[in-house]
Image (cartoon, rainbow over all chains, first blue to last red; front, side):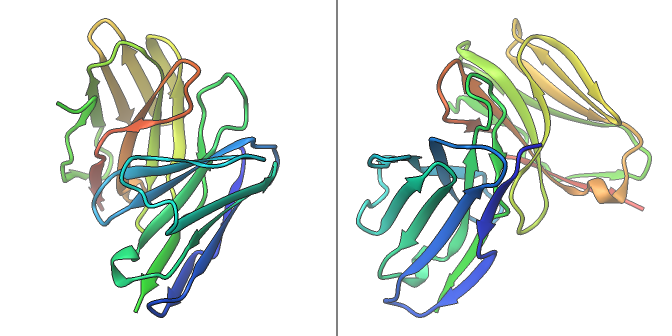
Amino acid sequence: GAVVSQHPSWVICKSGTSVKIECRSLDFQATTMFWYRQFPKQSLMLMATSNEGSKATYEQGVEKDKFLINHASLTLSTLTVTSAHPEDSSFYICSAFPRPGEGEAFFGQGTRLTVV
Amino acid sequence: QKEVEQDPGPLSVPEGAIVSLNCTYSNSAFQYFMWYRQYSRKGPELLMYTYSSGNKEDGRFTAQVDKSSKYISLFIRDSQPSDSATYLCAMLRGSARQLTFGSGTQLTVLP
């Protein structure tokens, strides 16, 4: 299947600092990527849709200024958690659809963020 | 009522058993149906992808879709301890690209 790579797989940061998470499509171009957040023993919650060359679309209740998304190329989207707080600690996952018009979505490995 | 309902389990079975995982949905606009396997602290891995009603088989896995009943299933034959994971069903409307997930079923296959 198509490969979506996420980096880093885990990160620990201090409160008040910013953390950047990268999501890359390795063998296809993705004009759209999706960022999810997952709490322990819960399903994935869509945070935002990342659009190449334009602004991201955020889901209701997701703070745009806290979760900055940049989709500067057809193979890279980044999520920056700004001024991180312990409540931002979570598992963040990105996804993309390699074949337009088809429903197969592939996910990155996920990034576990711990804010101390 | 959630658009997609999935029994969260947990479900424990002995090695070699046949596992049946199910989801029901309420929105008839869903056209694409997927099953993902997620190991702890990992991203979801696509197992099965179907577009229409019927069965699709891949090795030990069989996915069934019954659009008339709004019901999908994943069967795992000859289950192995390595199948122990959380299984998520996911659905997609037509041209939309936002997945709707079930809550996930935690499966443990005991050796």
